[in-house]
Image (cartoon, protein in one colour):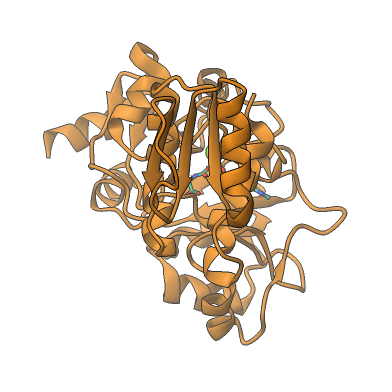
Length: 319
Ligand code: TXA
Ligand code: MG
């Protein structure tokens, strides 16, 4: 495919290429080229000490990027790659500091999207790619979102349609004795435990590496966003409307009231569909230019863990 060859050539020339993955769109650069990687940080406005995920065409390249790979990492890679999972492993000495944020670990993943895999195979090595959004903003799940974020600053945007999963990969740290999930995703702890033989811990330990997705405020729309328990939604809504605010509501039930100042969006009651739609919904709500986004918190429970994590950070980061 001509478009893929052109994109791979651009990567070889040190340019940025945005491409679809099954989770969100990535902003890619040759992970072995410091000048190209610097372009990612400049385009995103991302702090230079935040490490990047390196995307690989297949798990056979693991040993070019990581050392002291535990046996369980091979089993996990065989079970879940290509797929929405990033592994944190001890870095190979050849990995440049701009990728690792100067840490002794590296994040690696084989994405499950035909265009991403074609690009990676044609390029033949690691492509560093954070989500293709400006730092702290909502991740893009369509090529149109990427163009909205970067405009002419990113000239090649491969269009693979809307992303299947819709939120970022699960990050599993296998660089120390105890497996840990540093960022929950739709591939959940129980699925990982089935292959690891033990349940991974959730959350970073005290001396954990920096994870930008773990900042309390992240994935945020520009409209103020409040996350409320479902039973508090009606009270919060009438308070806001009473103050004369225009409001968008995201809840899994139909509108409890009608008001010209109110736009009510019924979310899916199913976690995978909710995740698939989440970032596109937040962007759409921003476009409506209302005063407030009110979201009814989804149910507790492991199936909603990743969605709840993103909603919490979106609420913390909203201006
Ligand atoms: O689904 C995804 O993972 C998407 C697609 C494009 O692959 N990528 C993505 O990249 O979400 P980004 O940069 O937005 O988030 C990557 C996360 C960051 O929170 C970063 O700090 C963390 O991965 N990370 C990367 N290398 C790490 C390392 N060595 N140790 C700990 N965290 C790391
Ligand atoms: Mg991101």
